[in-house]
Length: 383
Image 1 (cartoon, one colour):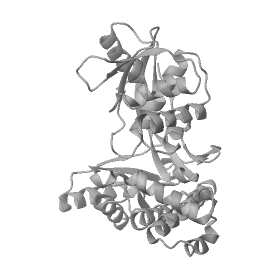
Image 2 (image 1 turned 135 degrees about the vertical axis):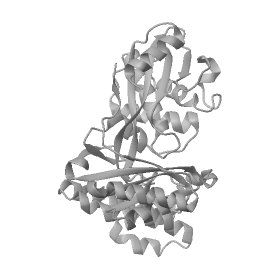
Image 3 (image 1 turned 60 degrees about the horizontal axis):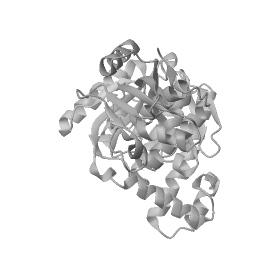
Image 4 (image 1 turned 180 degrees about the horizontal axis):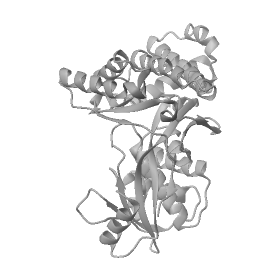
């Protein structure tokens, strides 16, 4: 849907034109999984797929929400609805942003919002962060807050943590708010410093494919929080603030001090994953994008074996892609379903795609959606 179509849908829903339309993208995390909740390093980039929000201010402090795929009229929220624990489901994400702005001391009034999206939900591509960032940018503009993008990302994370109740890190919101086209974002999630690393697969004769498995297994319920708690237990046992403080060269020594095999495995993943982020950044800065492939595959093995967040569909996509000639592949996102990323030569991309689709059919899985990911701009006004 175009920005003009989003504006027109707003007018139909509310009977007046919006003040503007803002968009925020989903993201692919190239490397650096489960490191953001351990104050580590990540390397995401923004997708062209985005959430669009048409918005206009309200003087009464109320929030009215209309979603493009909902034939019903707008939902109105006010008073207790705009406090944590009282609004559930997808209205909680925009409501949480308004609450988080106010909680952070910013003067933000009410708004009429119409939202539509082409970010696949439940695919591990951060559709929720895209909603939060698009709404935050719209409210920022409506009320003249002029907040820096990293601050908007912080507010969106607060909304998801404290209002929605998801204990996520800050990577998704920062990627959606701050990425640049043709680049991946090297983010230190402890101090929030970042660098834009040139990343143009198509310009190098490559394709980065996203394989959306279209599944999400029930094992994901509670698994994120459980693994985060395990990582925190490992950090306490090792006497460090967070696992990012364990140098890779001291990993073996650190693991020897951990009696719990489950905690050892979690720690091993986080420490080696931080090292993989640094390795990928080094390859991209040196103009060696093809060398990234084996690092992706190593990252998948770590997520599968040590962090135990993969699933049969993701493992199949990665294995078959590599067998069909890909340079490397891994799951991306929280796991237990969602998506995998595959780096391949441009000339091999069609064959890799066919092989993955054929393997899913042979295994009796749903046909996956496969598309080429192109690094795009972060949140912005579009009309």
